[in-house]
Image (cartoon, rainbow over all chains, first blue to last red):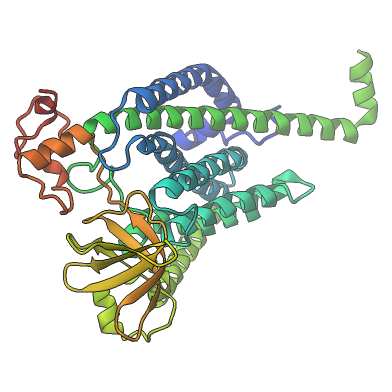
Length: 263
Length: 177
């Protein structure tokens, strides 16, 4: 009925229970509106707080406000890739169709957040550093992340049969996962023009609370928006798959299909 | 061993192999991955004059001198230091807004035969500290932050409890007064 194999009855562990596409559709349908609402409202509150109300920075002045878009987008770009890698891993090892569909769903969202991160970073770099772009380890590794997302999107659409694309795309996603720690630690391992981490560091964050609070609110908002979009695209992927399965069944039995149409 | 378990082991082994290969590659190419050399690196490495490199460090306090050339261009000289070693840099042109004493810079150019550095481009490098100007002023007024020095550690001025007395006595609550 779903066009996807149902989990083996009796082996109902947590993974299989929530990976059942039918159950996933019901659960995600109930959660989606709340997630979207929370994501949009937190993003609006956080961005309004950050872009208008938060104090200026002692050395960067008002230019620091680009941070409220740049940093959450960068977190989502990397977090999204971790999600893509996990989905690909589950799809590759347990061959679960829902994992393949969600990987296809996540990749374009991650690519958009990575593009936002790169563009805002460039706009921030020009007035502060004096350059739009440099090939330092942080900037280059984020550009590689963007290309990995694009490669994953291209590869998942390169096959006539979408389901056959899942495995090569999953392998690409997992190979690309080595880039995530490189992005994170590039600023610590090598000299870069980009400054080291401010928020996730040992001891107190290097961002004053008055600037940090709107940043974290916006980041929560972006996270929920990302999750809502990922759920939405995964739902669309499941429906697409069902439609394809129905069409394939109809093509296989033209007489039966004709009977259904006239009925 | 079930097929799922076998696939799990294959993927894990591939990940381990790939991770090791990446780590080895990155270690081998470490010299090419650094964006700039510090003055101490430069002293240790004996890079010949004329080769295009980038150097980075903090602009030494009190080392900046400005002059105007015959054709009206601004000529700037300063020392870039990493604490252990320092290097004199000359540059003609417009500096980024963030350029100031005590601030991080990355200069692209080449060493001259005299042992100074002739920069073609100067980029500002800021640190990972963000705070309102009032907090920065208060820290400087109270003597916890010497002008031209990097900002004091964040735990001295950043707290999630606005009314708590911070070790530096420069908590958020006092900033507003």
